[in-house]
Amino acid sequence: MTIAALFIMLFGFMFLGMPVAVALGLSSILTIFFFGTDSLASLSLKMYETSEHFTLMAIPFFVLAGAFMTTGGVAKRMIRFAVAVVGHFHGGLAIASVLACCLFAAVSGSSPATVVAVGSIVIAGMVQSGYPKPFAAGVVCNAGTLGILIPPSIVLVVYGAVTETSVGALFMAGVVPGLMLGALLMIAIYIVARIRHYPRHPRASLKEVLIAGRDSVWGLMLIVIILGGIYGGVFTPTEAAAVSAVYAFIVAVFVYRDLRLVETPTVLVEAAKVTIMLMFIIANALLFAHVLTTERIPHAIAEQIIAWDMAAWQFLIVVNILLLVAGMFMEPTGIILILAPIVFPIAMELGIDPVHLGVMIVVNLEIGMVTPPIGLNLFVTSGITNMSIGQVIKAASPWLLILLSFLAIVTYVPAISLWLPQALG
Image (spheres, one colour):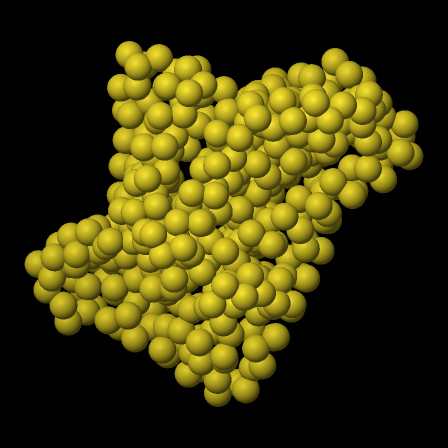
């Protein structure tokens, strides 16, 4: 009865158009009020306790670092470097756009930010060079999803906070899958470009590659500082986030000088708006998770699945289907905050590695970013290309086959996710 009431209210409120955060909090409060044993006062205390979670402090700093990097000319320099490295291949500019998305994902931690920063520059350039506009839009729309897989990823931070999994391990686990997915997209582009005879750039000289690399090195150093600092034992992931924010500020204002000092308050305000939105969702979602735990809902579901004698591989199929469907209607952070507290205890009972589960969930959420009707990357791509949503969906759809194939590989080959964290101990 309690389970039914909680989820009926949650999805009912969302169906009525209520924001996800409010729906999570209100359904939790009403469930405790009518069916639970906790007092409402304990809920306010729980919301406060979850909001001051040390791991969650990483989110505002990573958001701020991404804001400085997005506002500055970091993306422009990374695109120039990517074109110098791979532009001479068939479909070189499209391949370079994927490489630029990989590089920018490593400094922004956000898929929409990656699409905007890279797409607003490279899509127009691809069209001018002779690529069809739908092809250019489809490539960038899908490549932009790497923003939530390649570290530092805000989504991985949220998963780590909800499940108490090491954020450092999750960051390292996202590196190999992120690079592998980028490589798969590049190979597909190369094949299509050869068949359709898309243009290629003249091969850049070694001097041009080195100059472009030198110009972009300050932005690329951010990922070295974050991952190197965490695994070198210099600082925790939360401290790494704070260092990255300060570093991004120095690079944008004093090194590249793309951002004037007087413009810094505007960047701070924009980053604060995003942070407030995320933290409000997280606080209400952790309240929702508290109600789930108090009412022993995940335990009841886990016991039922174990009673069905469901194998781990069967459970992973169910989770993938659930996440793919959820990704069509919700944004990644909300999905993790709602579903992770439910599927995580079951996965632990079945012996599934929590880091592997986290990467698998994020790959599902990547696909959700480019599937209608709510796929955020679709709307962002539509905005920067002036194409209709229907045109963007048609352009992005063929590339979804690569993402779905990659999901199957990541799901059933855990070594892809776990090799690097295990190698680093």
